[in-house]
Length: 405
Image (cartoon, rainbow, N blue to C red; front, side, top):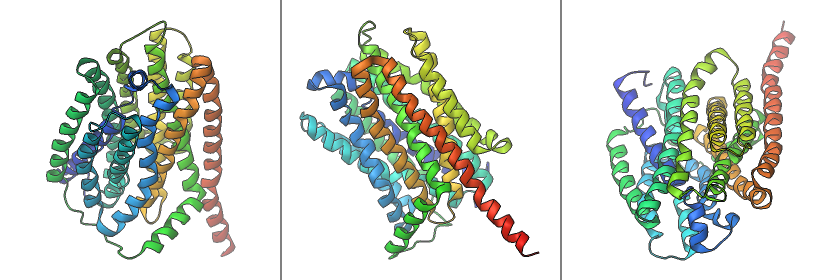
């Protein structure tokens, strides 16, 4: 196993973090462009959300198939295949100016993104020592947030300065060179054992993970958390380019700097886990995120930015703890388990956009906050259920031990 602070540790964690950075740059490139693209294609806010939701939904559907594939052919091959496919799929969007062609291309991109996202954590779990993994998972998710920030900000700024097609070309070229760097740095796994021809075995593992409430409730928490987090930002983008603010797309995209609060909180989770229970940390993250949504009701840009920072801090804190919970509690087929978590996560993000943007269209941020409260209530209820469920195996084991004496 690769130990903390060894030269191999630094190479592996940098390669995976940079690959993650590329994935999330591409996934979120179009999010700040949504208000601009809605006018460009003359469609509503909920319709233009397909440009974003097509990628997240396709990603969520393909995570498990890619994870199963990686159990047979290896994590590294799957991750590199996805990285190298991304820039070429992005360029397909330049061929046609038709809205639904672009939506289809964004769905194809989601399939490629899923290849990397589904197995990167499994690679870390298998190759890194437990101490090294606990440190690396925070850095990996921090790279997720940095990729999301960069993709959104550069997407908005480049669209303002050059146009959306030029922004897409620059992102594709950057991704291609980044994929080559990951290819050079990421070593072949030493602790991976392929399981070829065991399709039904993986299906059984899938069913086993879903029937394990200690895992499934954490997956549902991740989905509810992301449904709120990513789409509150989308709604805020529409809010800032509308009356009375009328901000340009490039300036409105700077709200994603608030994601840095999430980068910080994801790094803090390793310290939290050493001292406190992960589930209480998930609740704390939810409380922070909920507070941010309510603060942002105040019709003032400073309050909106404070609200977004609280949302980011809390959402990434909850996500990092829930993600690590699933990867560590799964006793077998870890890539399938982490892929299932991410499937729930991105399905939540896909559906949450249509849900919250509907309330934005019909009542502004106040209605969005009211609708969001229902999802927060669900998330806290799931944390309570997870807390109760996670105690059951321990209680059962104690009873069994007592019965033998």
